[in-house]
Amino acid sequence: MKKKIICTIGPSSSSKKVLSGLKKNGVDIFRINLSHTSSKQLSGKINLLKKNKIKNICIDTEGAQIRTTKVKKKIYFKKNKKVKIYIKNSFSNKNNIYLYPNFNLMTVKVDSKIFIGFDNLEIKILKKNVKEKFLVGKVTNHGLLESNKSVHFSCNIKLPPLTEKDIAAVKYSIKKGVKIFAMSFVNSHKDVDKIRELIGKKSFLISKIETDNAIRNLKSISKKSNALLIDRGDLSRYVRIEKIPLAQRYICSIAKENKTPVYVATNLLESMVKNIQPTRAESNDIFTTLENGADGLVLAAESAIGSYPILAAKFLKDCIKVFAHKKKISDKNLYLLN
Image (cartoon, rainbow, N blue to C red; front, side):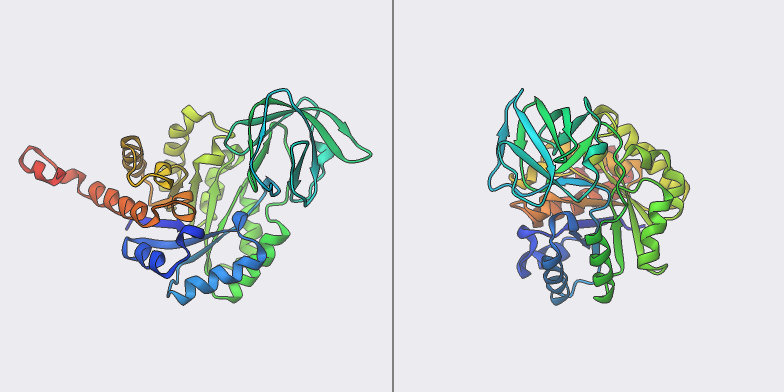
């Protein structure tokens, strides 16, 4: 099976020149991330890809995920600062943090913790104001608050597998001829059934493995999906980071048992968001990921907001090529390393 390259569309990859360069460098699927695409922007992105003769468009849902609202500029929260937390569609500020989508904030337990983004911002819940429906928390680990960052709770929060925005976007995309969909924060095969009802049997469904529940229910999820996608970033909220390689290897092995393709995302080439060349560690990570059995590699920030989206795609293509030749390298043909 040919190894696939999936790239995420964003400001850095929205020009005709870059899209052409990505296609020439082996990108197979172009991903639209609904977590960073408004309902108004969706039609423009789909039309842009179609205008550039791109057929394999993937719509990636927000799923059961809580996020921060927008901030006018990044806000630094120092340790021990007290903040109020609301469900509200408004700009967060230095005293109030607003979250979306709507859910029952009062189900959050006192003494539980909130983790925001991947910048280590951590808040302990001190008390609830049930009448005015907000939480009071204290920063236990300093960090930056930015727009539209993922939010995780140490206690269980029940959320529907698809947001209202997801449902509307999926229905619209189907009308526009989109046939590939990725479902975020799948927890069980029942979540897979939910989106399958929307997209039909003929659409290609990628279930994203990024929670501990998804790992527990991996076999049943795998059987009902056309492919799996390991999101190592969000998964690291549930699996200790030093165990992520083990989790990746396990997920790949289960996918192989069920003959389900598996793709891997997050931090493959994070350094190339700003730098023209990747690190040796990234090169080694990609090779190991392919050895684990990955059928595809995903560019996220690298292609969406990075400075070198085409070079990032080219590097993945080159890594895949080298991996394909690994068995041919011996003492007699070391020239293959050049």
